[in-house]
Amino acid sequence: FFRGGGAPAVTMSVQLDEEPKTKVNIQANECKVKGSKFIEKMKINDRLKIKVKTSLEQEQEKLKASSDLDIWCEIVPPFHLLPKSLLEKTCNAVLRTTLKTLLKSFMNELSADYKLWSTDTTYREERAKRSLTKTV
Image (cartoon, rainbow, N blue to C red; front, top):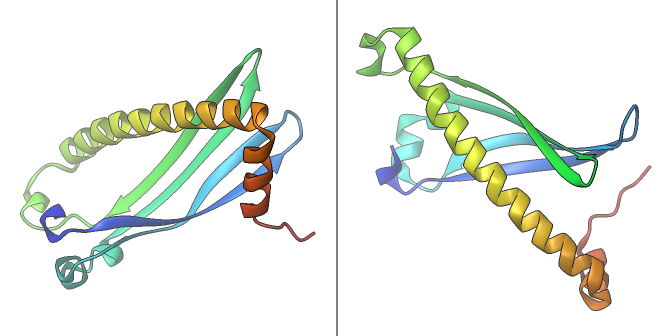
């Protein structure tokens, strides 16, 4: 599958919920795999649907992150010969580990970015210029 040189392309949205507790929700609105003729030939994007939502909230002096991941995929040969329960358990274990690793990396980068943002006025101004404008 990945020998074709594919890469994920994700469109994300960020929403702030303030009730009952302030929470930032980051949601993948569209997830596609792009980048090769192999992916197009196999119609990977027709065979795979991914929904991801990560929520960030403050708990005492720490930032807590939790994610919901929902994946649907078509089972293609030769995998259709394996029991569905085995495929689900294997995929769930791989995805859980992958998501945990990605979330840890994201939280470390977010923490480093916040520390720089909170102490460097120039950096804060540059970030504000790059932010998307929200229309109400």
